[in-house]
Length: 193
Figure: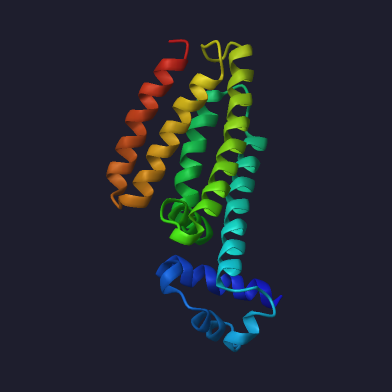
């Protein structure tokens, strides 16, 4: 139980102050313990940080898997556009995912390779899910195309564009305009119009 409280406090401080600005003393104080007591639960700051990061990664993945398990497979336009809105909502409203997004773009330099592997892992899992969906839609003649990899990468390009806007921009109007323009061009390219 205490480990989860520590991770919640760590999430708060790592999100606000980054890895370098967050201290174990602050985190310990937040949960009402001495700094040394954290070591009974975690090997150190790196271990705590990586556990918080992996929890955030799992939250993102499970949210996206849950979305795709509930969608109507016969409506790719609605499913894909809804997914883009899910991405925006997840990263605007969930502190864990704000942390994950920021750390995937700005990792602590000494943990860069480890975090890069975590990011690649989730990207590969999402690519496989999307590629399977696109292949099903191509086979059902709901979208045009031969190989699912092409619309998968094009769609992931839109997702990446949104993520960049969420990290670097804070203009909701620009985010929505970018989404609308990207979506219009993407959907025109894969739909039977």
